[in-house]
Image 1: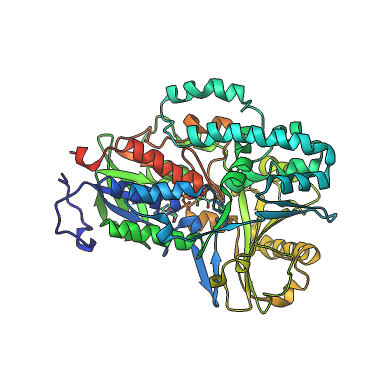
Image 2: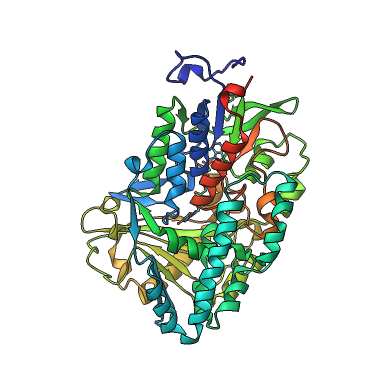
Length: 516
Ligand SMILES: Cc1cc2nc3c(=O)[nH]c(=O)nc-3n(C[C@H](O)[C@H](O)[C@H](O)COP(=O)(O)OP(=O)(O)OC[C@H]3O[C@@H](n4cnc5c(N)ncnc54)[C@H](O)[C@@H]3O)c2cc1C
């Protein structure tokens, strides 16, 4: 039963039914949307609040001059996760979202002209390995087996259940030890492959969730198996389209999406979260509060005036954040038939791999060379660009703002010019003359648009001592009635990760009927 006065009730669509317990979700990122769907399915009346104008957070899009720029996630894996989420709401995911399997998955290129095409068929993949280094074929077969073992443990077991009790961690420690989770992804790849290029091709994946391959636990080699087993998909209409469908589900459950609305603080009384205070000063009462804002922002800013047992400002200061990103979104005119060898996903390597990673993650130095991920969705999805044109984004991992030393206002044009040169020399000749529209995101954009500490691209870095129980828990350690979802919590960043944070939340929050 709801007893508190809810000042937002006048905005809510359906006030005629019996009063349901109210859940407020701060943030309409993919984790927040999935959490809202789970809470709606559990019988709560849900209000999702976000300061952006569209849902999806990092998975939102912007529209400019006839182009749609999907701002963040481009690769969808493990479709079953989304099907499970929709099913929990009594719905059919495939009726709402069309996933298009891509094969080949992506191409990796090096400056000397070597290429590696990741794809579904194991023999074809083995041939790609043999093309680069015949002596590494045996190691590849072993690596795939290693990857499968880590998938069963890390993804299905560890990633989909709560990790908020120390005992949850203690129980899995023997498996951690057996699987040599102390070893890094790169170290594991180096054990199986002699060739440095193949070591890169089988260890770079953690970069997609903000992990440094030289330090992230080797449990993450599970991605190679996951890609092969479940494929690499593209959500037609972009992830932003999927986020819009999630918002529709929330509304169909009787929930409310309050966009362009900032949250100033989480209100707390006698150690219990009682709702949120908006930046407008309005207070919204709730029986359950879920924060999908970055875990650091949640504790440091939204709960600034609350003494913390675990996530004190000092502890958050010591916490390592993932790298940031420089992303250049651009549309090109009349190019649909140009660059015919450039597919949906391309990775362009700098000559350095380990040295560049150290610059980004450890030294915090903006290097002159850069490795790029190039997204060209227009080859798969005609809705992203006017007919005959292309929409691209090109992403370069860069140090986060906490390292200091880079003034992005002056650096932005210089860095973009360097990026253009790499692209023109190695992938898209004549690019400069074809660009018709553009948007640039620097680390400062990540800080200001998503309220991401240090402008980090993926929140808290997934190192072993910042994973599972060591991460901010999905049920807050600080106050009752507060839960956390999203990239900074367990299991972590990436679309499958944040969707799983909501699945874990569903296991921790009581059904609405049990809320007094
Ligand atoms: C460029 C890029 C490419 C990526 N590519 C991939 C990929 O291909 N595959 C993949 O799986 N993952 C990818 N990722 C990672 C993935 O996008 C993220 O890990 C995931 O989307 C984060 O979701 P989240 O739920 O943590 O919330 P976020 O997306 O961080 O959203 C949080 C929301 O909370 C809102 N908010 C925060 N504070 C407040 C406040 N005080 N008041 C109101 N609202 C607030 C923000 O506005 C935001 O909308 C990529 C990320 C980026 C940036």
